[in-house]
Length: 225
Image (tube, rainbow, N blue to C red):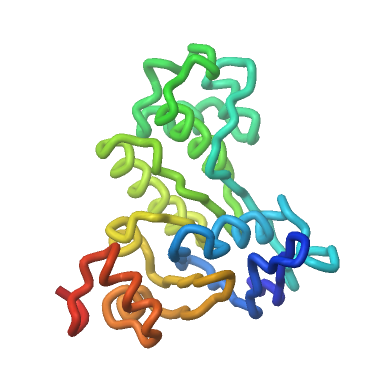
């Protein structure tokens, strides 16, 4: 799946400037970088929530895209009905709720959920049916450790079973190392470095990437610890 070059400007400030990218089926791409580097903006552009400068889509060969924003939104109905809004059947919803430990609140009003439970519900919603590209913006940031582990496993299984590409924004470098096959490093609005996760997360080429990983990810001066 090819994503055309895109930029996003607010007033005189350019917050994102990204070249063309190709996301391959079955690959999991971690989007990392400092706060304000353009990660969430890029996710929104690819998801179609934002328009790029000049308007139009960022895709050159779009397929089915599903998107989970950083702040999940519960509708005024039960947890199960919220999940079923994405389509699919009750059996699939029940399976996802069990794996994400939501079965005990399935008939509860979604707006009464905690932040972590709301995130799990929203993740279940985007995993209800197959897609070509799954975009997740900080999907587990509100979850406790056990829920995050379950969510990571489920995302990996979904990608493997459907063959979709996954683009996920994360501030958690340990999560990126656990999940990603590839990584994209954004810095001051630019895609500064991209490549296999094993290379970029442990032995990056760009000094800015190395400094970021040394500060936030425990990368030693000589590379992998």
